[in-house]
Length: 140
Image (cartoon, rainbow, N blue to C red):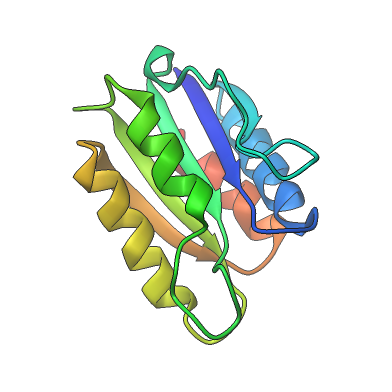
């Protein structure tokens, strides 16, 4: 199965390690996993993410701030520009940080379902090793 692991980070590189571990877990389960960063180095939205070409979408993000459940602005723009995502299977992952991580996860799932993605797995991630284990278990 061809899997897109899409990283939607607010700032910094910490989330990248979680996404790499998740992609490694998918690869250990025998899948082809591509790691796609939704933002360029200058903070702009990356152009040309071709999400409809993948069989499965895994979104990895974090809360926009420690005290809110808001999503990063980039997430909704990426999903809306994806086109052809209706009926695709996917999973939502949020790096556990701040006080409202659970609410952020619910918001990510809602945004994905709004675009027609069937969310069949969601989880709060507290470490890269947990992300790798989750990737292995989803892929089986």
